[in-house]
Length: 165
Image (cartoon, rainbow, N blue to C red):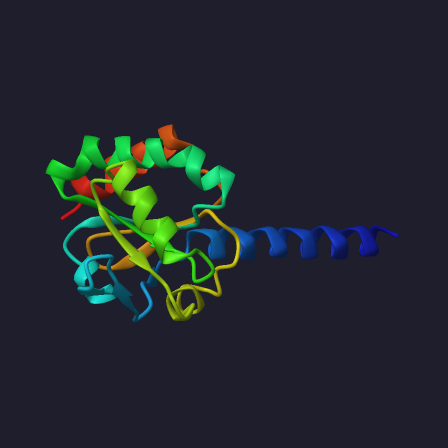
């Protein structure tokens, strides 16, 4: 009986270790092109050099709409120190709704529309909104958030990443 318990405990410890590794593994931001509301484009390579929050959202998502003022506040707080935000509207979000929301709320950062869903697929088949990725200055994803992040913890991580060279 002791042998079975040890096996289960060892398997559980291994599973926890793998989960922790995957949760903290740093991966390069996927190659993708963001089409901005003004018609210009930005690539994932353009994210390098700044700490960037890439936020997948929709105007029909109540959590997205509720968190957006906090995303704006975070952008305003850290923008002068090398922080950026890129909001990516999901393919099912009508472009007119995205433009109206962006203009009426005076979003201070770049907003892209993922018309084809290619960007969401490239970033891990994003389907749930909001989903956000924090990207460091080297263009690596250091954290993924599904749902609204804990903004106090997010701010601590942004400060840490901004301090890195």
